[in-house]
Length: 108
Image 1 (cartoon, one colour):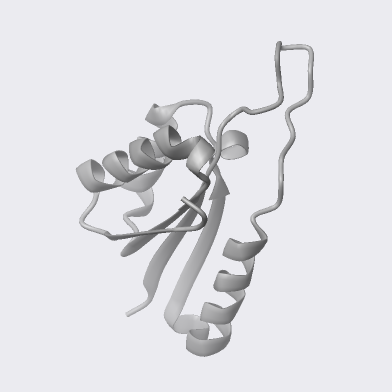
Image 2 (cartoon, one colour; image 1 turned 30 degrees about the vertical axis):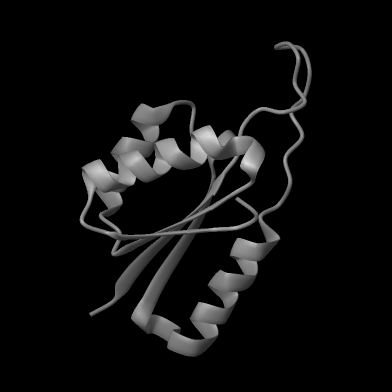
């Protein structure tokens, strides 16, 4: 049976001061490396998806919807201390809307 792994980079708005500015987005290289390693080790036994909370979700309702729809077996969350609120909120949403194993990592 294929395992579904959802990797989320818990970010927040950190440079944008108003709606006319462009937000800085950093590629989640750590999560990309992890996904690549998992694919190398387990091949077609897993399905990995990577999301950036700043880019991929407008609000918490979208995160809830995605977790309910995808029903992942594992939710991995990466975050910085600066974005601990977003990290904790994504963890709470994953716990409330799935039976997934939730794993936290990153500098936070």
